[in-house]
Image (cartoon, rainbow, N blue to C red; front, side, top):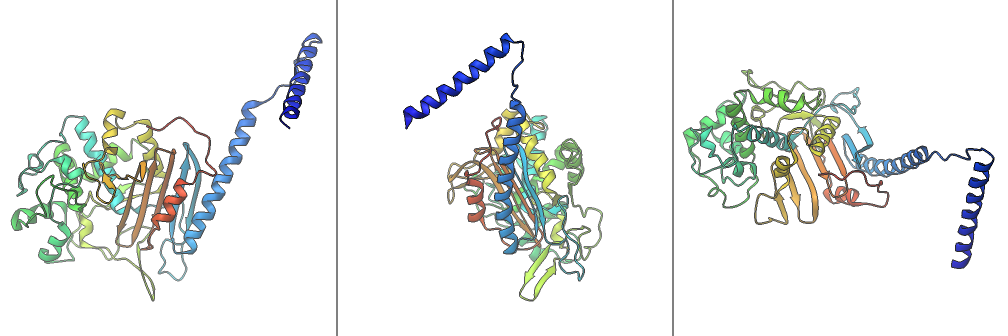
Length: 395
């Protein structure tokens, strides 16, 4: 069988050479193979098969409760984007979700807050080793650094528990400044000593937003718009601010409302007094804008690679439950070079995955409390049966 194959290949080569040399003698240019077109056609077919795989997977999630927008890319190519469900499930005549709809990112906001801190560090306006009280002198806790806030190793108590206990009027927004003032007045007992252990806590990134304000001299929402969103063309992204509000509106002014799911059906999530705190949550964005941010990280648009790489380094020597935390990004020992974050807050769910090992990117933005199934999602991301050809390696 092997001899027969070798014979056939040799024969085909002989025919090709004969045609080539005979053509040259007679002045013919011969048959020109359009190799670029052939490659493009083959690549389109592979992308289509990859998109079909994604479509089957996400349609299955939608049948099981996903109401939201998904975006998947591989090897730098947009492979799949689709919207499932409705903007406001409480309406009798429902309005379909659209690909460019903006959702509340919840804790996925943290990767952007971290990026703001990194920009200021690169400009020399702060240092990761700085004591937080350099910028927030009224903070009644010693020995906490900016790096420890970024890595969730400050040992500080939860601000939401503090506000629930001491904020008298839930119809009035609770802000970053109000949080700092309450910490200074009440001096709640910390959970532990600085840098003693990893403890994921929203107060760390809320304080980082205040550090950004005081180090830059700008409101946090303005800094994010001018330094990150506008330079990257993230035209649908913004920080929801209640800075000038004297009362909490019934609902946030957005087209895509978050929903709580009950046995009797979905209910539109109301606005909350804690939505006045920025940095740990409350950024709105689209899957397309998140893809732009991912591309900027790949191209080192905001920061040089040597500085941007800090975001993806584990911040703790110990790996709690085989997981670690960088600057606004989670990482797992089971998935090397995969950086991700889940988000949940007041009727919204989100997930952003940056898989550097396989050059893949995934964003899922949902506006219900449907719990995204991690095992199924990780299996989808790790499936290489229809992998696209390798492009230039990510950093």
